[in-house]
Length: 372
Image: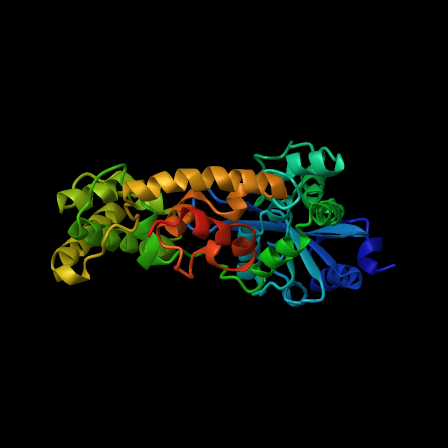
């Protein structure tokens, strides 16, 4: 038996202990992964634990132990070992930030469930119960995972999030196989290999995530919104503070519509607040000085009534088609993707235009509902 599996202490604090745990998982070709973190007063989450599991044991890697995690990075990047996670992207981003891992052969149980007859976006607790009859106690949801020492109850709670993932994967694969969806599932999982995983957001795209609450902004207003949102994103990353602490979204939208820096809802102290106000004012002035042709259009396209009407018909068809396939419809396409495809079925960047989505739905939608 591997040394890691023999240990009575599930907490990994040294590089040799981590290497032993990784060796146990590699021998089985299965590594279950999860993370515990705190994210309430920083731009980036503060990682406390990385939970590792396989069929023979589970371990909690203490991220405050300062150990060399090269063995974990190597295993996460090893294509011969499947990495099982639930709602994988954020956990993979945290693991990558922690040890530089580039993931290969990822199996996301939340995503897989959508091909196995379950609704999209199911939480792990509910999925475990409905798929394999395992009930998890949610007793440590308010734990500060950065405090030490952790109690045995806290560690046991954390390990439960990886303990049953190999069995859950087996069940989901069997159900997907039974529904004839395993090929689609595997194609979807392959998209997680080497995917862009970062705890940072692109400053140049930050403005596109801000909701304007029905306001009709012109290109100049969007130029200002782009400038102040980019500034906030960069400054938040630099100070490692939540972006909203430097000014909420409504304050940025007001700057865009009023063309000036007025009242800002923030959580900065006096000196930092004045610095930020001055930077916002500079960003507004720079945006006002841009040539008209450099001002962006609304990132949320407006569609003609024919497209919107056809989308409703296509959505009803898609829901029936997904139900027949036992695939959650939102995994095939969300409303925005479907509307864009109905408007322009020739757009190869649309998820419905290629791969398994085109096979099961895109081809038919283009033929029946696309608006010329």
